[in-house]
Image 1 (tube, rainbow, N blue to C red):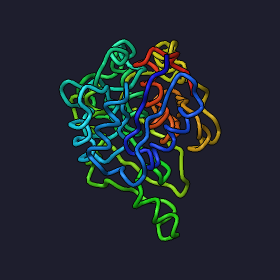
Image 2: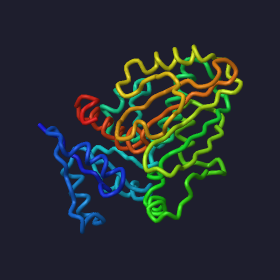
Image 3: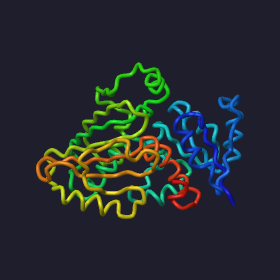
Length: 297
């Protein structure tokens, strides 16, 4: 028996990559809406009614509208709209108890790209007691320009965007609420993201100034936390850390950088459109339909 899946927004960057990961599978039947009717509420409602799971690859407002159309169809929402909303299960399978919760959930909010790296670095330290709840974390990161959506992609395609720039300079990035919620932070972190002149790939860094934890302890904490995570590896710090090394995969690599004592930074490297979006959406789908977690990935 196959699972029927409707990708609402399949023509977008994330939707296309989800479709690529699913279309060759014999355990999934993709439900599609004709291109001319992709904005038709009636056509989309019919597609949700025919599907077992709907995956929303839409802007926030459109995702909220889509949930109203979806009826009883189970939903994975790749937008920001529902990540800390009541009644929604957070779709980051590596968190404690998350696999079980996702597998039975009707509403799953897919984790954001920067949030994936940030929470992956914070949560093991919080759960281990290595960071206090009121710790003021300092996070930085750089992503490929596809994370900025169609408008930013168009700027880079036209050659009008800078090679590198900071954004959300008011410390108001849209992923901060979910980072705080699932990274278990009581204080708003410093978080400064950037964009580089490459399509995909991401590095997120947590700078541990004032944290009383050694590099050796960090490696032990992360290794234990992710021991059963099929897509997360704790690896030695390379001489050069490339943001694009994991492109096209659903993998994430965590490294401990610094001098090992008072200057320590931990990094998470991932594909912002893979582990940070479409890859995790497929991972969540696998859990929801009872497929192997690694299927298609």
